[in-house]
Image 1: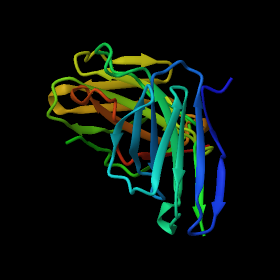
Image 2 (image 1 turned 120 degrees about the vertical axis):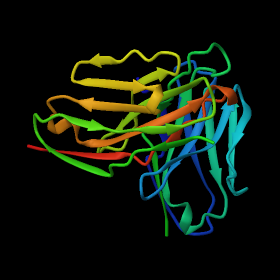
Image 3 (image 1 turned 45 degrees about the vertical axis):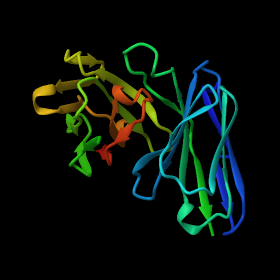
Image 4 (image 1 turned 30 degrees about the vertical axis):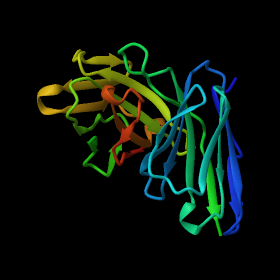
Length: 117
Length: 116
């Protein structure tokens, strides 16, 4: 059973289109994230949700809109795609970092490689 | 502000050699968490280890070992007797407790190439 699953794995689309990436986790975690990995493999957080509530919005363009219908799902919708949006997008989940003082590792999905042409 | 530096970009070793990856971090927080992740050629991100700032005990797990030193703000990672399957990009990451949101700040990664 896949702990964090994203669909699709590959997405090729034209500039200006709108697309969505879906993410689901079956780990029972309360917190979910979206990270972006650019062509140089640099990873940067985009959003974080805890129990459907937005916690982090890391100065991402308004064209990116996360949606969390429940705590096991965090989807990413992108409007008016641009060439610069081409990247690998990773979904992740962790236990609620506000509970306890241990720090919790994030578990990542396999990534969605988005190519805008 | 968080900052994680992995100075070595690409490291090539011959199989069975040891390889050490350096990670230096910056934080103003007194409580923080450090991580290493592995990204093999298949692309997924695999969690390897977490260390809390109040736990400087170093650890060995099979062929992997970690050296955490708060005095030098370093969290280095060593693969002993490397194997071809160790070829991957390794990321060091930092999370600060203050924000309570587990935001991971990643280093730029070390590309490890193990030559058979």
